[in-house]
Length: 378
Ligand code: GLY
Image 1 (cartoon, rainbow, N blue to C red):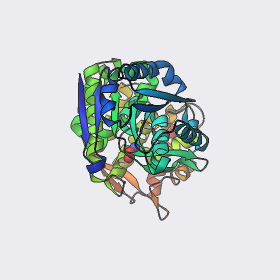
Image 2 (cartoon, helix red, strand yellow; image 1 turned 45 degrees about the horizontal axis):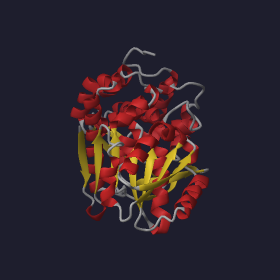
Image 3 (cartoon, rainbow, N blue to C red; image 1 turned 120 degrees about the vertical axis):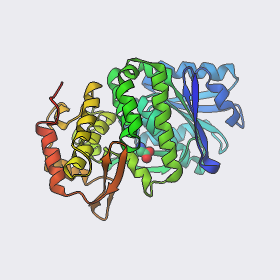
């Protein structure tokens, strides 16, 4: 079974194919884009071991020549040295302007390879084959590409849309539960920012989805991609509405920085905590009901997810220090921090009108005692 989400961006339009067994069938999707029967693939050492042979066999059967660069797994790969190595690989493989390069991996590989494709010969086409849940529902879609620098995450990059996304649901079976559930944080984000009925569906179907229900997984990825596609078509380069996709991210980026971008906190885990904090802040400002943050946290807890700063292992900075880290956010304009707040589940909006003392009190409570509205479960 597979479904397709179309991203209608004019001459940059593309399909997101979502379903089972897509790696094995990948050549039939890739071939129509090739002007010569050759592709280059970039992957990481973990994905190489798990999934590269399926892609290579499919290409071999279809007579498509291929060569592969394997990079180290991990966030450090999204950096200048590996961008340089990727570009050298493409040039040494004589990748031409009309060729296609393939990113096989999670968000790190997708962002790095997409950026390399954006700048090679002023832009070559690329295909995303995302292998993590987070990449399937977020980073492989929408054309944000880039690398991290010493100064921060994603500070160097380009908008460069893929020409095709192949989200093979079967590859999710190889993720650890922690990694899968972290990606699920991004799935829930879509319901919270724009579709209460999707959040309600997740409350019902989340547990079976986590256990491996294929239909629930396909449906969750489809709805997430469709919501993202709808927003991107209206605001491709984040002049306004696209920023709503960053619900929870201002809190999340501060927490990730405080955790040293380490395994202490995976990005999707930070998104979940950040969403809970955005709802808590909104409730304290009287923008949404008190029940909303309780409902959000209850679902995260039911899924075994982190919901508060005190759920993160190890010592975290105090509220004032975390607020300073939030000031590094890309949504700071003229020194003013813009927040994504909510007026209810599925109703988000951007505002700078959030008193600092309210944010400090939310951070303080989340660090010291966690949610007060429900008994804590570890
Ligand atoms: N991950 C947020 C965006 O693509 O805009």
